[in-house]
Length: 213
Image (cartoon, rainbow, N blue to C red; front, side, top):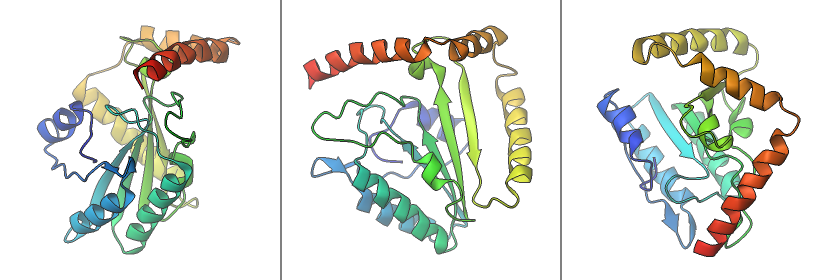
C-alpha cells in the first residue's frame, strides 16, 4: 500500500486478519510514484511466494487518479514482478470510481482491473466496488467483488472456488448483508435515469473540488 491510505485498511488487514502492511511513498514531483511501488514491491517479494498489492484510485484520502502514462507503468511493474515468479493478488479498490475531475492535469478514467485480468498466470486481479460512494447511498454498505484470473482456460473453476471462499468469509465475519440494501441497489442500477442522476451528483462534487483546489 502507498503511505497515503485509508486508515481502515490497517484495521481490516492488520488487526482483523493479522497481515503485515508495507508502504511506499505515494507522491513524487506532483504525481504517483510508480518507481517507489516497483522498488518496494521487489523488496517485499524477496523471500515471499505471494504478495497482495492494493491499489485505491481515486485514492482515499488524497483523491488522486493516475495519469494514463502512470497507469501504463503500474501495469508494467506488476507484470514484471509476476514474471519473476511472485504470485500477486492485486486488489483494485474502485470505491470512488467515476469521480474524475482532472484537477491539475488529465487523469486516467479507466480502472486498472480490466488491464490486469489475464495479464499473467501469477497475477489474480480483484475489483472492489461500493454503492456507498459510486451510487451516493451512504449507509447501505452494499459492495461488489469481481475476480479476474490470470489465465482464461481455467477461469471458471478459479472463480467458483473464490466465490465459495468469499461466501464463507462473509458468513464467518458479518453473517450476511441486508437484503434491503441489495434490493434498493439492484432497482437503482436498473433505473433508466441512473446515469443522469449520478452525473448530477458528480457535478455537485466537482464544483466543491474545484473550489477547494
